[in-house]
Image 1: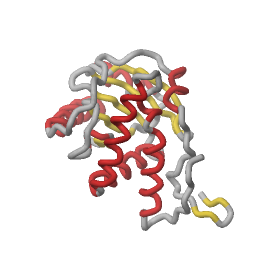
Image 2: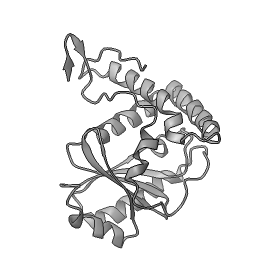
Image 3: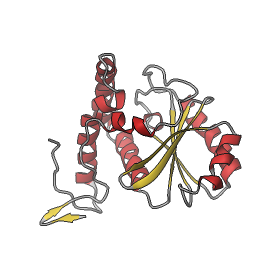
Image 4: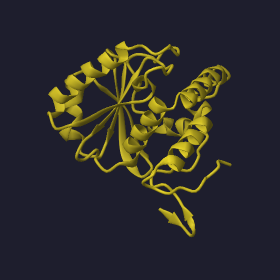
Length: 209
């Protein structure tokens, strides 16, 4: 993407303070198990992802692209104990080709929506507690997720900043704000740091409003 003389990273997205609240209209069901409170990093989360990955490969086939994303993929990061996973399928909208296979192993569809122009479905699993995000292979959001995780793994100062934002978001959520929206500003600012440091794509600063 190029805006006049201003370079913009291809994975940049405008800041939205209430995107999580807005997407609730796309909800089709509720998760099996609530996320629970923030916890210190637990090395067993990597093992939990391994269990989810094995189940997904068994259901969708050995060539399926499956990635552990989110805070539980970052050693040293506090997180709600929910394993976030991105999975790529040929056609998200062709639910008959993948959804029954996932439901058979215990997943439940909770959202159908569109993120950054890409169709997206979110499913949950009760054990281990999992958010599964289904995307098409060329979707932008899974690439954003991988960049974000990689950055946090390599930058302890930003892990601390994000951890502080999470703790503050929990307090804000107690006042009626949605947890993800309450930390959206810090997430956006961290992405700006990620994009500015990417050697493959020039990016001029895009401060949020």
